[in-house]
Length: 266
Picture 1 (cartoon, rainbow, N blue to C red):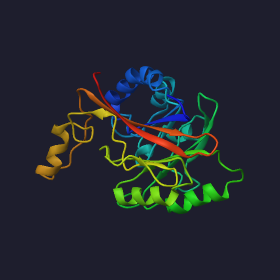
Picture 2: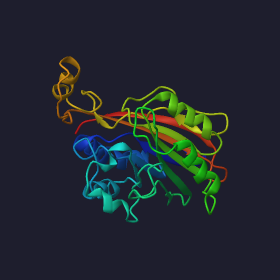
Picture 3: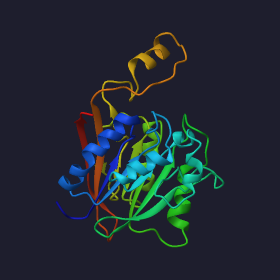
């Protein structure tokens, strides 16, 4: 395998089962698929909601290079100060500037290529943040120094039409727009005409026999009896969902996007 820098983006990691599956599968996967950089959405790693500094360090020590997030990044208060360190953990760029952390960074891949990793969040049925479209324009067009050619956006978003719109809006300006948040993989992975790899949702890395990662016993009452329940992460084999984007370090254009879907026993 060759032809460019290969970036793996892992879908929302759900609780302990998701973490264990990543730790188990990623070392072999990285070698087998010749991956140069690994990005993962980690906002659901702490019992299904939130991220702690210790869990972030566990993921970073297990082969993940950059952690992205979304609306659940604030669920564990202890992450706030950690986001202001230099560790490669992001919160969506369209939160107010006063919020802890940052929405993008540049990381060196194993092949030496600089890759800009960006995190943004949609607004439909989500928190009413600043426009992600405007924030991306400000970053891509107004940065003090131009971003490196390879640019990957984790767009954490509820509805596919908003994700789809972002893909077309950024086509030719970034190497990849990958959707997270809904935990269900979509079948629309492709490279858009301008050279941007796109998928509406990568899908989760979490228990397969569940409702988006959570146990049936704690979720079904919400639908059948409209009762409030505390969700618990399910058990059993884990669906590992990721995509691999191959991009030209010189131009940033993507040449391929491949879905990786595996069942991992933990």
